[in-house]
Length: 232
Image (cartoon, rainbow, N blue to C red; front, top):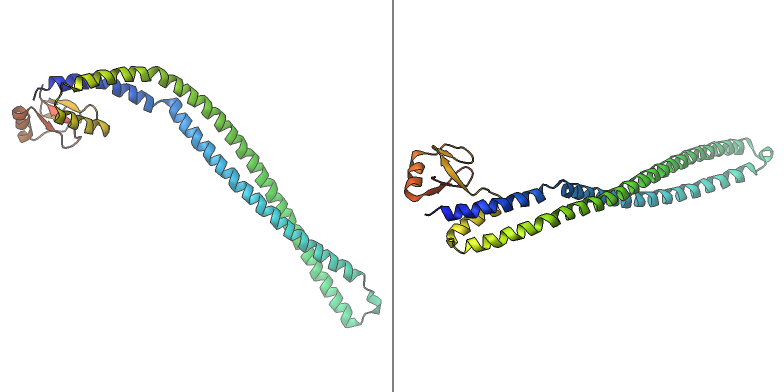
């Protein structure tokens, strides 16, 4: 197989590969994705906090009603004339008063705790909204920076692709099929030279039978890195 034409194609394709890689590895692109993810998580967190706040408000309303009921019972008890009660009634009165007083203390503590939880949720919510706003703003900046860089690179890529299409017409269809399959799997370069008895890319030592095959057929596939090894 005449390897020179596919090597010419690969040399030109290497320019495209570098440009594609520069876009894939672009720091502004990575930052934009990271900020987009942060904004999404902050938005989800805000929704969770809103639900938690609604739940706490309902709990507070329930405890308030219980507190009002217990307070009303206390007022009712204190309105009674103890002097007109029997000893047994006084004992029952005092026991009920103590129980209601304990209930009021517990309810008061519950209200305080719920109020603290509400304040914590609100603080967390405000912090999360700030994170969301900041991430959204910085995402826009990073995205604009990336788009600006991509705008200068994409015309170069388009020009190289046109040249590659032209070169492809002179290449064997099966050769191109093998090439493109590896290229799509991000295996690049696809063709590498034989270096003594080693793969020119991964440097794995080749069996003598494979080296003989390269001499006879012009190329083999590396069993380790899947690249096509040719003899210079």
